[in-house]
Length: 185
Image (cartoon, rainbow, N blue to C red; front, side, top):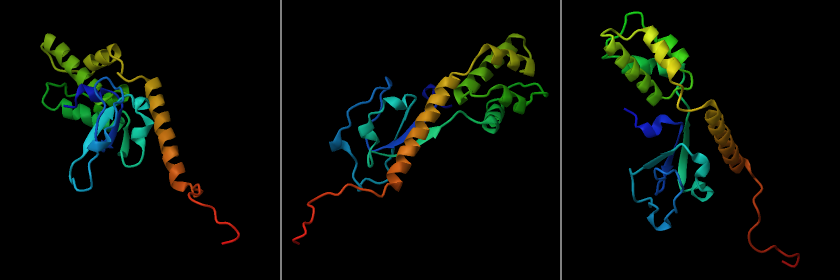
């Protein structure tokens, strides 16, 4: 089961050290704790649903080597999650996983698990099986935990970070460092 922390869109980082605590507030980056190349096979992975709060200094090269944006699951992934989570539950034979996936646009994994648990409770109360009508009712009563506004905000931030990264890679003009040669030399 994916922890509740992952119920929001995730920005995963492979960190040099440090992490973001549950408050989501950036913490000082202790330079003396930065792992060296001698330490192999150790990865620290952090996740946050507040990527805009990460201090720009920690985003510099060598500190956060990779960043990955994980959007809400697509239709096929949601259908697969329904199949997985409903595998050992008493379901109606007419359950349409593709239709359930269409009805749950922008729902994340923990949202889907919650919907399945709620549908199971309703079916248990009636001593019946989980049906499409139960799911339709549960879905209409429970909205996604991540709003469309938040998703757009995360996508805009991802685009901004990608553009900044690309600008750094394609930039040929580097400032000259050192002394300028004089004509006498």
